[in-house]
Length: 358
Image (cartoon, rainbow, N blue to C red):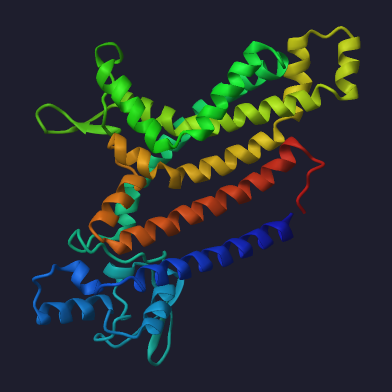
């Protein structure tokens, strides 16, 4: 067990290193002057030089890359020279001093994702901390809807295999997997938020917290969660339906199921006590993958519904060329994806002791 966890952690760190490398060079080889992105086209040469010095754009790309990795590392080296770019200040990096050498200090800190270009030096960590919880709530609600409805319709399709009910459910699930999320978001927003607003009382756009009518405080608006959660859950719902159906059909042909039938157990008891549990392994894999993907896949859904999450933040940052926010968001999503997958591998042992990954 311990060896397996260590191997997974090492594998995850290597993956994050690869993601950080790709993200850094992807945004640093793009055409255009990064300093120009921070300012505007009318900036003077003096202003551009100051910005390049502030953000380290005047250094060679290789050195910028090493400093970027140093900023991300929990253990990082910082110059003692106040004029150097890597000079340590607690307000900038946080953390605390571990060891001091002649020219550098070894600092223990949380990963430093740098500051926003467009928000007057606001830390990327702060921006993500304000938006990620909303995306997490949206993802949990979406996967909850997908699991509940997916299990119900998957079991119904498996029990009534070959009937018109099974055919209808398969048709709808195939449609759900085929339609892009952004199209579903536009369609649902228009139908339920505009055409049927008098009956649904749902808004076309809105976030979890909205200002009151007097603009004096925020109010919790749970109804704004319904449409984006359902739209984001359509595709995993369709996948879960197919997996539960196929798994249930396969399990129902096993010898122990025939034995349970011979003992006189009702079909409902057979499905609930025996068949369903043993057909859930692929479902758990799908749920874990979809939940992690939702954190990234919520980009267009959040933007269309005006849900203030990390997805909408990424789109806004791309529109304003706020590269540190985009890079930081991608790294956070990749980290969450890796952590979720590690926990899922461990959870396999709970539901199926024979499927030990170590």
